[in-house]
Length: 86
Ligand SMILES: [Zn+2]
Image 1 (tube, rainbow, N blue to C red):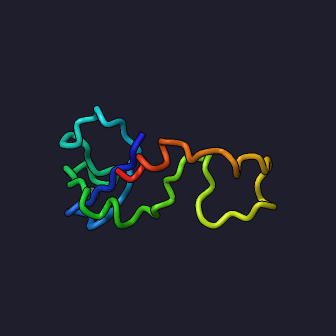
Image 2: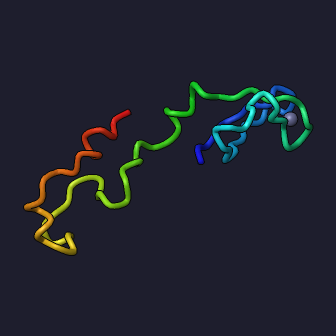
């Protein structure tokens, strides 16, 4: 489930909720005061580190010694890696 960041104008407090995409964001209320809160979608991408690489693919530089199976070096790059930049 994606994380959604909200801002309560009454408390001036930011908080993050793990919500299903099907949840009505307009019905989300502040956990402190119960006021309606505003989703902070604009800052969402800037605050989450871009470390969203699938766990099967190691992010960053990898030396051959770190690979559990060195044969992986000979495998073609999985298609989903190049398509992941969405
Ligand atoms: Zn509040």
